Amino acid sequence: MFSIIVPVYNEEAVINESYARLTNVISSLNKPYELIFVNDGSKDKTAEIIGGIQKEDGNVTLVNFSRNFGHQAAITAGMDYARGDAMIIIDADLQDPPEVILDMIKLWGQGYDVVYGKRDKREGETFFKLLTAKIYYRLLSSLTDIEIPVDTGDFRLISRKVCDAMKNLPEKNRYVRGLVSWVGFKQVSLTYVREERFAGETKYPLRKMLKLAVDGVTSFSYKPLRLATMIGFSFSVFSFLYLLYVLYLKVFTTNTISGWASIIVILLFSQGIVLMILGLIGEYIGRIYEEAKNRPNYIVNEVIRKD
Image (tube, rainbow, N blue to C red; front, top):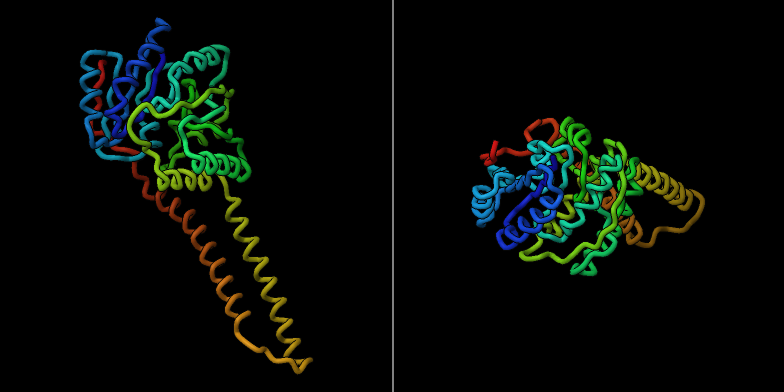
């Protein structure tokens, strides 16, 4: 049995087309399947449309959150409710072509536990987003101790044992693609061309992209903290040497300090470094705080499925 997990948030403009293409692809295999739509607190008619589809198609499951918990939480819920031997995670916006799923399933049949989509080209995206994404993925790869593939999103197939391993990970600020790499097993990439969004607007504005980026770095790397330590140590050494220089001028020469410009510059620079390091430490402390509360990743309002 195959489970297709589709997180949705305000996707009323695309949901019917998404359902049609996904159903057309997965039904061509003539094997049991389920489509799990996780409604992440949509404020439009997304839940209503999927509810109508579910009444006509028993292969559809609708999981409604009590509010918006985020894309990563929606993926996590989909994995929790999935009953298949293999799970395919795909967004509803059709940027990731559903037809690629068939190739993923072929690779899964060859013994791979994870088949992740690797974007060869990204249609309809701005130069700024392409550039920042390229920089981010390579920066993340250089900072982490595990290999997180570059130019990949959450579009992937995972086997049942990978799904079960993921369900045993209790952390709250989840970065699913990183966790999939962390659990290991046999993994392979599948190159594809990412298409333009079929309809509607992106649900990942700059603010959410930045949060996801921070989650990715802080979840899998302590190197920023080590870098902060190195910067602090280097600046302390520089300050000490400058102090010795000032003492030398005072004791052994008749030169006097003519102004405060250099002192002010050094003071402002040092304070900027200190605040940056405190902010970085605060990010990690914030993650500890979230984990310590031990709240669930999501709360489900209702589940509509054919048992």
